[in-house]
Length: 219
Image (cartoon, helix red, strand yellow):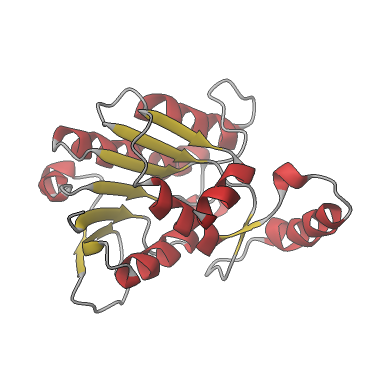
């Protein structure tokens, strides 16, 4: 197998930063092209970093070329400041990059979505993720892999009080054999699952629920 060149967006986030570290150590990848709003601070011979303005695709769409696009971009409502601003980052920016990748004949797309993503959901967050999934699967990638993790565990830069409270509760319930489909998952496992599924070529569109993400991280 020829070594691959990949594109990553969301490289400074919880999962994205773990993903970049794994890609740098993986000999199957010869180049990692990062498109980001701020630098990762990483200096590596395999890494090519581009600081971009996502609102100006004409300036960066020619860069979205390679074998796989890993999409891990996202923010919170608190950080974004409004639902409109969060939607712009979590949906519009990701879709714009995916659209450019498809136009540039990138064959494989791997997306971090969310558990219970549903375009018809009454909840803003899950509806937003569902709408992104809906729009992505219309693009002409050869293979699309959608990861739907639950609550993420790891070292975040920003403070998320709900996760600090919710994670121990879910972990306790899991020990009792309850709420296994909402089991917290470490960001590094999600990142490893993203890499592993990127090599799967059986089906055009593939969606992985939380328990399947744990399984894919092992393969």
